[in-house]
Length: 57
Image (cartoon, rainbow, N blue to C red; front, top):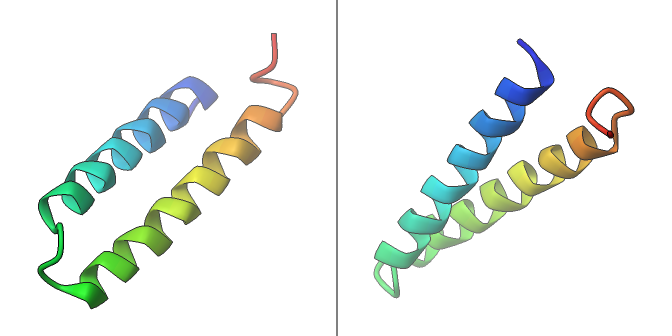
């Protein structure tokens, strides 16, 4: 899997998590907590991907 496709896949996942968080506005606190943790994990993976020399231009 190329760096670009991995970047786009992670970006789409981050966006879907954001959408899910907006729709969970106050319903299930445990699900919101899990979504926040998942979003932080995806964000860290995106940041690590951006630091790779192959992606830097």
